[in-house]
Length: 321
Image 1: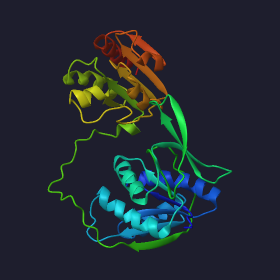
Image 2 (image 1 turned 180 degrees about the vertical axis):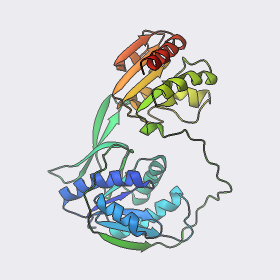
Image 3 (image 1 turned 90 degrees about the vertical axis):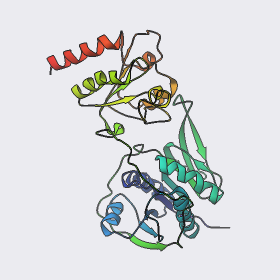
Image 4 (image 1 turned 120 degrees about the vertical axis):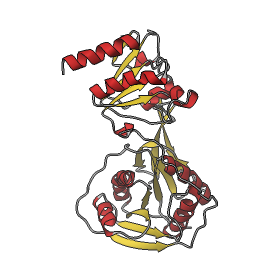
């Protein structure tokens, strides 16, 4: 029987990787095993030292000639070969867009299961297996899952676990060389997607527009409110996916936000959208329909025309600033 041991973490985003390491430290201590992480590229001492501070015992620098950008199939091969050699019991992967694409491929390649988008992880005291908790029914319920095959893979969305610095500590740096992997996709051109001034997932205040906003130009009104509150503007899925006004949205299939203040303007409150704002501390809803579902999730509700309410709100905020 193959002996699996230890916890392994990976994310192409170093910030997410440190979050995984903070949780992985807890899991590895319960398993009394080592915590490792994978970094693709050349060994860099500063990177390794930062990862040691967040709990890593071993930093694996995986090298493969010709790897100069993220390719899900290529990275899958790199991680597959490393995991096949190291045989970790638990594999944690950052649930970014790239991480999700990678995790599904990796689980298939390893012929094991994958617990996706876990919001909590623990070790069962009796069996010693990893237990993952996931949101179900757009956040209305939770489910606990286990993986009966090894390694046990779980993806974790960004910002689920708090980064915790263990402190200055030493660890081992191991360079792993993988045979050259040739991607099947040839990239001819890369165009940078237009991004806002800041990541909406980091915003302390979010003003969100829904179908009640009549035109894309009218989002200028929401931008004025967001600017007054030093926040960011977002939109619900129909504004982006259906109308094509924007490229990203707030909701279960888009960005999950956790601001101190969320203001929904003309947002009806579909269950998928509400799942994306469950972590907002204060929810304010502005909608002309008193029966809009968003009012059931709101701490404060204003029944009225957003084209009258928002300007009045901006004026009041500026007057009392």
